[in-house]
Image 1 (tube, rainbow, N blue to C red):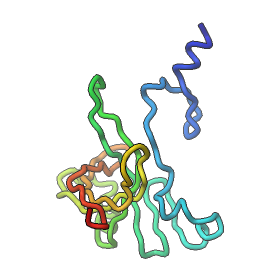
Image 2: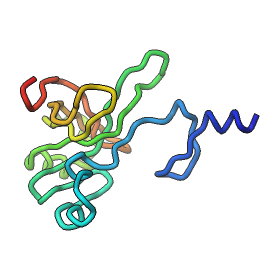
Image 3: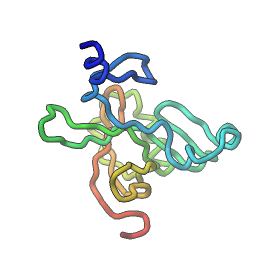
Length: 151
């Protein structure tokens, strides 16, 4: 019986706790352009936080959740991923980061910065993000499906 329970629970590398398998969601630790750098380049060129990153102080990334409705689940499945935003948008998000009224802010443009497995390439897909007060202030809402290549 203990073996059966172990198959239905997974150990989380982030928090160190065990969670039921059905609660596990896909999470990207870094945006793709930063992940692809070697450790030395990453240390020299990046400012990295758990929810925000900058590359060469000219490319800005924000971590958030992409909710995906799944039949049979009460709450949507969420993918923890990164988007790239322009400097003015990044500044606005930083100013609103701890402000509960951020939920009334309009949608903000962003570009997906991770390649989600099992679907066609998602890096460069234009989306809109909605700021959402809570553990992860950014909640991503897919609003456009055109890739940066114009497909």
